[in-house]
Image (cartoon, rainbow, N blue to C red):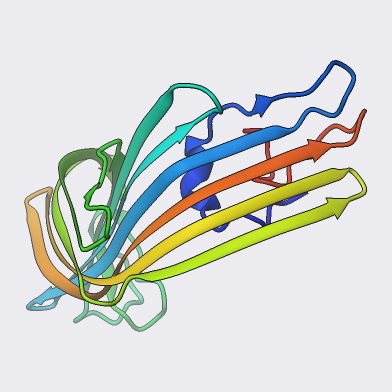
Length: 236
């Protein structure tokens, strides 16, 4: 059964601690997934020099999680994707390194791509007014050749702090699920700078965002039921 309850699933799923189980022997054992806080920031920038369009997609997060009771765990994740397109070409040929035309059609020929991620955590204040990450990430280019991406990104809040809550209590034939979210969000501007494989790009995104979610999801399968994982769609 696919999970449809906790809005922060994408961020929290890699961070979920093994479920805490309670209850007497023979009774249905509730599985509790608790994210104390998962905060992320993302941005997309584009810069042009001559015929070359460089696009940079950045996301960074930090999270805290724990069983109840249990030790607190912390984890960060930062990822960068860089794409360089020759906009002066028709987009029907193949760029250097065997990279083909840009997705979307009519956008020119992709001449360079790089994808990288590491465990660098986002540094962010509690009110989501500012955030930053500076790190070097190991990754690969479009041909699978190892590259190092040097990243410096800062986010500055520009909009009001938005607060939403979500609560779901659902009953299924295989069991019950109780999920709650407490979310914060703020529109932001971001300044991003990257260097990779002798290339560099710097730009500002005015449509960036900083978000935070605190969540808990409890699964209670009926006795004898296996494969009941509505919180995330898989065992935590």
